[in-house]
Image (tube, rainbow, N blue to C red):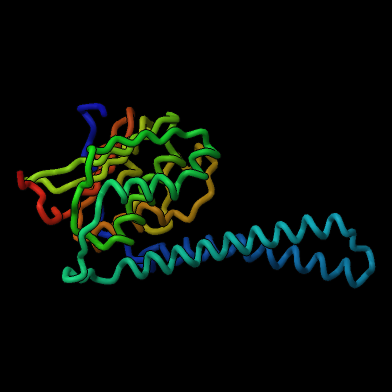
Length: 250
């Protein structure tokens, strides 16, 4: 990572319905719904006039299914963000292994990494790295950060590093890409609901603009902290967890 990388001053986790978010939500839902309504109307008219072509109908049904799946995915992510915004219960923090958290995130993003010819390189200590967190939230937070790097980085190599931490610094999972970095205009915006950065448009990637917002919410629920450093050479996202039992002991 470039030593001149800027530390991103993350905004407060975004409210799904604050500011222009509700308008952007409507835009996200309108696209697939319009597609479904248009195609079903077309199929109905052709069936009524006896001009339906079976092969064309099959293609149209595939398109309807794709639009419905996209709509369901958006709704599920909205529910996930809304749920992640609820306050964390510190009493429910459990021991987790950061090595396992990282491995689960890599497995969850394996398909999209293969589709984009990305190589996820994992570096971990020999043994477990103990932390305290909500296991599901920890896994999903790291997965969202890794998926974002896989989708939008310029270089094919993405590095995932697990650091054991000590009595001064908690154990951490770090995701590093190699460009293009976040512009000054994007640095805070991409962590807000339904906002997407320049890289999303440059790569022609479809998405809801909820991944980084969700990661930030989940990190807080874990009792962890998220730091982001960025430069044109790349971006490093680091989730630092609370130390687990025995961390820092000889």
